[in-house]
Length: 204
Image: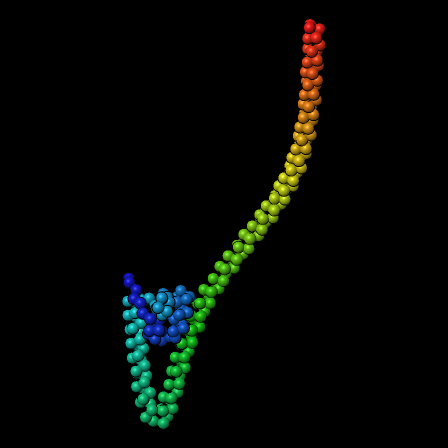
């Protein structure tokens, strides 16, 4: 069944409670409604619910009219006037009590909803703290692993420098050997040339 929309202030007047009470009931989820983009609070009720409230109000107005008529009759006499005044005071007190009851009821409901929200947020906070602790432990583990990796890199760099030094030493040794070989070859070439020259002199 389609719901009809009416202003929360009109609904409050219709059921005889304050606008604040209606807003609290909406916030607590007891009453279907919302604050819309125009900044006004609205209540969404079914036609049957509206009809029931209207009929209840009509009966209430009839009772009020009868009570008012009775009070007016009582005011005709002195004692009756006192009784009428007392009844009016009692009636006003009853209205105030009913309004206060509705306020307390809606606030109690809203409080219960807020307590559930607080419990949910507490659990969520505990879960976030747990997750944060896990992440911190993970970060510490990664830091330790990074420390070991740095130590391994440092050791490898030391080995690399030693290896480069050894290669440089071997390269120098190889160059020395090559120079010696080149010198030996040069000496041999010179010796060959000298022998060739002597051989040519003898043949000449």
